[in-house]
Amino acid sequence: MSPASRDPWLDNVKMVLVTLVVVGHAIGLVEATQGSHWVYDFIYMWHIPAFVFVSGYLSKSFEWDRRRMKSLVYTLAIPYLLFEPALFYFRRDVVGEGVEYPLWIEPHWTMWYLIVLLMWRLITPILKRHWLFLPLSVIVSLAGGLWDTEALMIPRFLGLLPFFVLGLHLKPRHLKHLDDVWVRLAAVPALVGIGIMALYTDAWAETALLWYDTGYNSLPIDNEIIWQTRLTVMMVGLLGAFAAMSLVPRRSLGWFTTMGTATMVIYLFHGFVIKTVMNLGWPDFTAAHPTLGLVLTVLGAVGLALLLASPPVRKVLEPLTNPLGWVEKRRKASPAHSAA
Image (tube, rainbow, N blue to C red; front, top):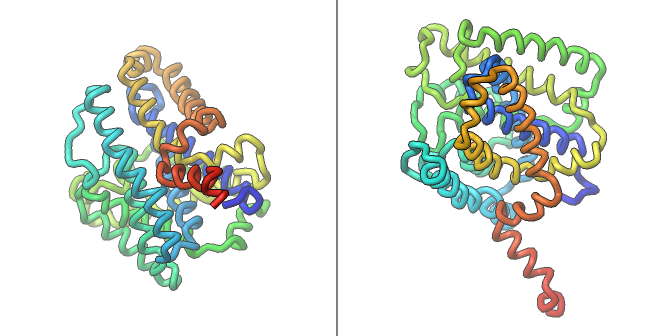
């Protein structure tokens, strides 16, 4: 997408959300810090649904044609094939974590989103044909909790499907309403309410429900209310997603908006840094200094996202996120190709 045709609001939203991804992963790895569970649950209640919604919204144009299928291979399939083993062996051989095979079939840690998004994209031409796929996707999501497997992250593929389908069907005119004054005024108390709910997550739900990858059989929730609880989590996620997105500025924020075009760099590389910091003993420090540890972890995660998206770092790392596209672009820009 050319700079002139990009929506600065979407780039702002993407940058906010991918930064929260980094924050969430960082907090999830230093659980001894005071207040970390509340911050973690608050973020996870809505930031993944928001990220999936935006992914669906930006997938509207996908069709089964040669150009788009090639782009899908370049931007999702190849990075998954490369970074899945890269992160696995880094965690196992460098950090010393006890991660296990198989590769690719069972995505490791952050890599799940690439394969799930790829599968969503492949069925996009069907899902966007009729709005009835939206209520159907809710039923599919509720049924997704019956699966308890890590193979291709099918539970997340099914569980988060409604947010993706909603993104496919909402149009720009619908999202314009997020800019309405009353929506923005309601967004703040909505997020405050969700923050209060996050204080008592285990009283009305389970943190594992926020991940959309845990089977109902593995949750300590009665069968009579598990479906209702899953639906409640989905509704809270949707409310939080729209509330947060309504507070993101519509105008270009300069360097911040530009960084929103580098979300793949942030997503693919932040895990290596977080695992390195973990291996250097960060959990021990945060356990000894709970409040300070939490604050520094959040600030460090935000700083990491900004660093990875900064022009100098992005220039070096971006070709690795789409190596075939980078080679093709270089080849087309070469003097020999221009002369031909």
